Length: 79
Image (cartoon, rainbow, N blue to C red; front, side, top):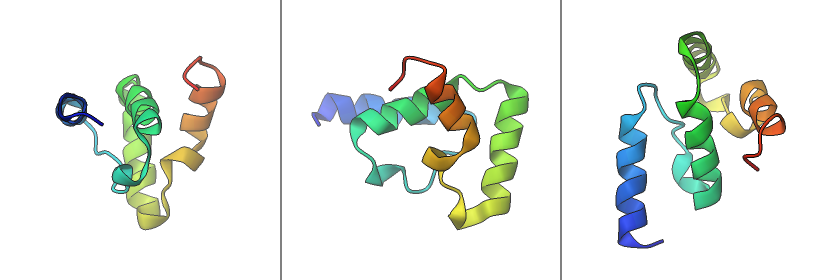
């Protein structure tokens, strides 16, 4: 990953108004982009549901296994 990609990626994450998954660094760039695209398109109610799930499940929350992410991925061309 080039420096500019890393810089843009960092700026993008800061633009989200919701917390990002703690283990985001373990994913390849394409998965990170997919997660970012998913989180950035959530409406207010979906954001609240995401935050509640993340808080309640704690370390066992895994965004790639979440119903919301998988439904979004299935119904979009973001694979």
